[in-house]
Image (cartoon, rainbow, N blue to C red; front, side):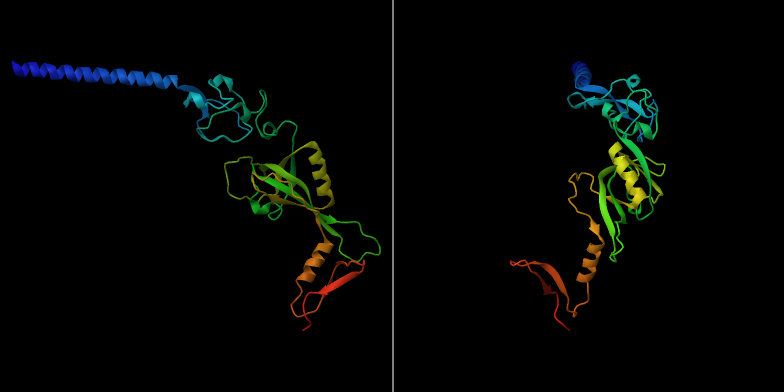
Length: 267
């Protein structure tokens, strides 16, 4: 008799524990539902210029207090929209990452409002050995010949930065920002303003262009005066072998007379 009562009590205890567990689980699920929101995220890596559909996006739970601005909660809100930047798997789809409604896919959807896409020919040296990839920023250098007079015998070569912090949109026909391997190509497409497009077109018509890869977050302008043939001559003079006496102009003294100083003792 006592054994039967004990079994009943054990059974009741197990039932109460199971009921409490179920209630606790339901309560936790309700709290979770209250603290999360449904957000559209990328179900796979998405390249820029891609038209969105159900194959590349999905709904996911996101903490309600950290939903980013511009997020979407329904697939129909972004149906047929085009990405203007690359989106990683699991990353929320945001309005700021999409081209305007009605934009077609491809590179034209990637170009920012007020900007233009312009392609320049490059080789493995000009293209920074293939390290200038979509999403990188470059400066553009032009090397040309200055005006030469009949009496001039010196080298009139000039090298000058003409554009700074220019976004690389594509290399050859590839605009993906996910690949970080260097690619040697024969053409690079850059995002420029109309004024920059004019400067770039003029620069490539008067000399040879070179791309200079720069730090992604560096926004400081380069305060340079450019280099000329005189700069090269000075560098060669400074690199003369030791033991030879040379005198290099320094500047006017207090009386206004130019003077020179020896850079090495006579051998």
